[in-house]
Length: 349
Image: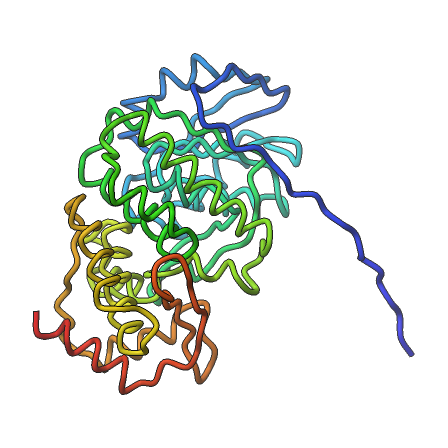
């Protein structure tokens, strides 16, 4: 005996990404802006001059990757319940990647899903975290191991927010731009080698190209069953580094930069990337004062931590390995001995 539930529907999750001065926007529903105290102090007044709603609330959560946890999610959800939000209500993520990920996740589970909008305020979140619908939080086992795919209704990228961004956080965002160029676009990488991203006009062009690259990939593979995994270049190594240092020593983009260098060393040993190409990537990262080394104290435990990566299965680890500059390979064929050899190189730093 069998009963079939036919759910073969085409759901259109398309949305626009606006790279320009934030427009005036009105919402005829309850809206909550989720932010942190630092961003609220710098830019909330500006945002409130642009946003109006039937009812508008502000929810603040602590600033930092270490607060991307269940406690912060509960803070957001409890505020929504207290203000009697319903399925037509909306959240606005106003901050960096941490705020965006948590707001998106909270919106995905509140009453089984409500809409949200991304208004990213860091370079990293503008070019990467705000685009593509990945939401989530961290736990003691690793980064973003709890979450959901939940696309925003819109993304507004206003370059004004970058004027108050500390240099270190700016550089962390550059790492994500470099990531997309190395894996998907040789010409974009060559542009970055010659460009000065401290120039506002040049930076906006780089943001546009990075966002377009990610948008094209997400359009092909929304739920990361294939090519979208390539956007995790540098992340498999980087997430272990973040977890080992309890998210306190490196910004996400900094850990990704080190992870890219590690992935490049792996690619060189697999004859997928030349020494010169690996050197060019390293040089570009150094141009923006990004870290390129990390002391791997225990290669064996570092290797075991790979298995907590979301892309891995019980017995194999999926790695994103560059094929030169502008190409990428998603593989589970990286042998343990080869990886330990790479990790031992960093253990000598």
